[in-house]
Image 1 (cartoon, rainbow, N blue to C red):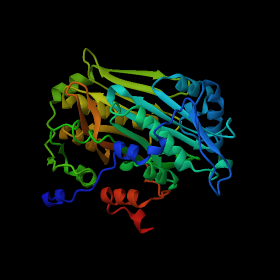
Image 2 (cartoon, one colour; image 1 turned 135 degrees about the vertical axis):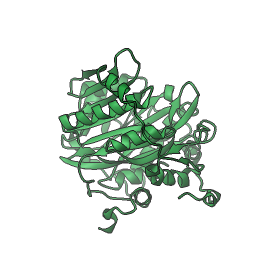
Image 3 (cartoon, one colour; image 1 turned 45 degrees about the horizontal axis):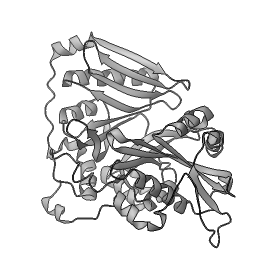
Image 4 (cartoon, rainbow, N blue to C red; image 1 turned 135 degrees about the horizontal axis):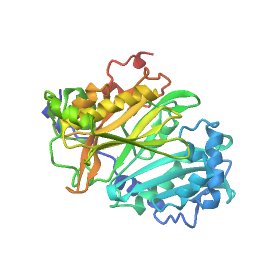
Length: 405
């Protein structure tokens, strides 16, 4: 239960502005020209960073092959042609880490979605033989500073997915000013085994104040633990908790079943963009199927009524069984409890409450969402935690026996 008196306990929220103000020495960074760092005592190499060139795509792809021994789950990053496309894409910023001015030792990437006021970081990798030989935190701070400054007031939240098999990525998230906000159990498959991830996030100070929807969240009681974590972390207000009865129009359900359309777009890596829609309707559910790692992700949907969403959820369940999918994620509105109940009934569980996540273009506000996950197998215990990730997991899984190991 969330008590009103707890609202009094306010904790400062780290923001994009806080990060930029913490590193004034990076104010004049120009990634096009490249930046070199002076060598400190104990460091064996002199690093530099700059924007990647299309001609460097092959080396970037090779780094992913080497670091993950050919097991990287998203094969686009092991492919020279695809990496080159991303480098040329104005919405991507690939940055390479170098030594001796021209030897590439690592990389990272930033993707921006200006229309939805969000951005992601991904693709952080350093050659195995050179890990630990330079100040990666300083390099990462410089990279992040340059991107955050470039998109200040245009991108209101930045996020990334952080591995749980070791604490290195979690430490990096901590030093970069990001916080864990959601858990993705068994999402990925590295080195031939399942591995969970965390979503880490950083907000513009206006994202949680000026731009966050004023509508009071309406959540089911199953979402309360996730909400409670965000409530404490971001000083949220008390939600409306309700579990309305799901009353379906059976005639409408039968009619929808007879009007379903399914389409599949496949890329050259075998990934499938699956869309299920309804004849003469704009309603749909769409997700990306990765056969190599047996996942459905990047799910979006739009419906006119609960009967449509119920049918879509049933169709997804059938595909999960047919395609032997082991992981499915869907981000669900925090204001429509009947949608939450449909996904709960379909076997998904809430693993995170993210305020100010989805930009509503019509209302010009950021809306809260709930992360719902289907996980076929028992959650992998190949997991290492920092204090902040342990606090988060203990909040949403207070009885999980991993904490007793």
